[in-house]
Length: 109
Image 1 (cartoon, rainbow, N blue to C red):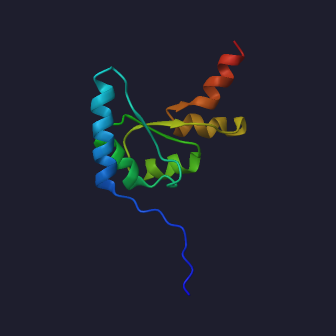
Image 2 (image 1 turned 180 degrees about the vertical axis):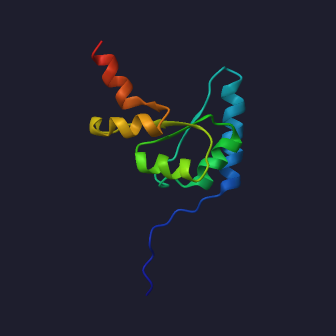
Protein backbone atom coordinates (compact mmCIF):
# COMPACT_ATOMS: atom_id res chain seq x y z
CA UNK A 1 0.00 0.00 0.00
CA UNK A 2 1.38 3.36 -1.02
CA UNK A 3 1.63 5.87 1.85
CA UNK A 4 -0.06 9.19 1.21
CA UNK A 5 2.14 12.19 1.84
CA UNK A 6 0.76 15.61 2.69
CA UNK A 7 0.87 18.10 -0.14
CA UNK A 8 -0.47 21.44 -1.12
CA UNK A 9 -1.90 22.27 -4.52
CA UNK A 10 -1.59 25.89 -5.59
CA UNK A 11 -3.66 27.56 -8.26
CA UNK A 12 -1.99 30.81 -9.31
CA UNK A 13 -5.10 31.86 -11.22
CA UNK A 14 -7.21 31.44 -8.05
CA UNK A 15 -4.67 33.41 -6.00
CA UNK A 16 -4.85 36.22 -8.58
CA UNK A 17 -8.65 36.09 -8.66
CA UNK A 18 -9.10 36.02 -4.88
CA UNK A 19 -6.55 38.78 -4.38
CA UNK A 20 -8.21 40.90 -7.07
CA UNK A 21 -11.62 40.48 -5.43
CA UNK A 22 -10.30 41.36 -1.96
CA UNK A 23 -8.30 44.31 -3.32
CA UNK A 24 -11.42 45.67 -4.99
CA UNK A 25 -13.60 45.13 -1.91
CA UNK A 26 -11.18 46.65 0.60
CA UNK A 27 -9.80 49.23 -1.82
CA UNK A 28 -13.23 50.86 -1.89
CA UNK A 29 -12.76 51.43 1.84
CA UNK A 30 -9.25 52.87 1.36
CA UNK A 31 -7.54 49.73 2.69
CA UNK A 32 -4.45 48.27 1.01
CA UNK A 33 -3.74 44.56 1.19
CA UNK A 34 -0.55 42.86 2.34
CA UNK A 35 0.04 39.42 0.87
CA UNK A 36 1.79 36.98 3.20
CA UNK A 37 4.02 34.35 1.63
CA UNK A 38 3.97 32.10 4.69
CA UNK A 39 4.33 28.36 4.08
CA UNK A 40 5.47 28.75 0.45
CA UNK A 41 9.13 29.58 1.16
CA UNK A 42 9.02 32.86 -0.74
CA UNK A 43 7.92 31.27 -4.01
CA UNK A 44 8.21 34.12 -6.54
CA UNK A 45 5.31 32.88 -8.70
CA UNK A 46 2.93 33.08 -5.75
CA UNK A 47 4.15 36.54 -4.78
CA UNK A 48 3.75 37.67 -8.39
CA UNK A 49 0.18 36.32 -8.51
CA UNK A 50 -0.69 38.31 -5.38
CA UNK A 51 0.86 41.46 -6.88
CA UNK A 52 -1.07 40.96 -10.13
CA UNK A 53 -4.18 40.68 -7.98
CA UNK A 54 -3.50 44.05 -6.42
CA UNK A 55 -1.40 43.74 -3.27
CA UNK A 56 1.24 46.41 -2.75
CA UNK A 57 3.10 44.72 0.11
CA UNK A 58 4.49 41.19 0.44
CA UNK A 59 5.18 40.01 3.98
CA UNK A 60 7.19 37.07 5.26
CA UNK A 61 8.68 36.07 8.58
CA UNK A 62 11.99 34.94 7.07
CA UNK A 63 14.57 37.28 5.62
CA UNK A 64 15.85 34.51 3.31
CA UNK A 65 12.42 34.25 1.66
CA UNK A 66 12.30 38.01 1.04
CA UNK A 67 15.79 37.88 -0.47
CA UNK A 68 14.68 34.99 -2.70
CA UNK A 69 11.72 36.99 -4.02
CA UNK A 70 13.82 40.12 -4.56
CA UNK A 71 16.48 38.10 -6.40
CA UNK A 72 13.73 36.73 -8.66
CA UNK A 73 12.77 40.30 -9.61
CA UNK A 74 9.58 40.62 -7.57
CA UNK A 75 8.74 44.30 -7.37
CA UNK A 76 6.81 45.13 -4.21
CA UNK A 77 7.31 46.66 -0.81
CA UNK A 78 8.58 43.90 1.46
CA UNK A 79 7.57 43.58 5.10
CA UNK A 80 9.46 41.41 7.56
CA UNK A 81 7.08 40.15 10.19
CA UNK A 82 9.68 39.34 12.84
CA UNK A 83 13.40 38.80 13.13
CA UNK A 84 16.24 38.72 15.59
CA UNK A 85 17.67 42.13 16.37
CA UNK A 86 21.10 40.69 15.52
CA UNK A 87 19.98 40.72 11.85
CA UNK A 88 19.14 44.43 11.91
CA UNK A 89 21.80 45.45 9.36
CA UNK A 90 20.65 42.83 6.86
CA UNK A 91 17.03 43.79 7.46
CA UNK A 92 17.79 47.45 6.69
CA UNK A 93 19.50 46.45 3.43
CA UNK A 94 16.77 44.08 2.20
CA UNK A 95 13.39 45.05 3.64
CA UNK A 96 11.15 48.09 3.30
CA UNK A 97 9.32 47.59 6.61
CA UNK A 98 10.14 45.44 9.63
CA UNK A 99 7.41 45.07 12.21
CA UNK A 100 9.87 43.70 14.78
CA UNK A 101 12.25 46.64 14.47
CA UNK A 102 9.36 49.10 14.35
CA UNK A 103 7.86 47.69 17.55
CA UNK A 104 11.27 47.68 19.25
CA UNK A 105 11.83 51.32 18.36
CA UNK A 106 8.37 52.33 19.59
CA UNK A 107 8.86 50.66 22.96
CA UNK A 108 12.09 52.60 23.49
CA UNK A 109 10.39 55.99 22.96
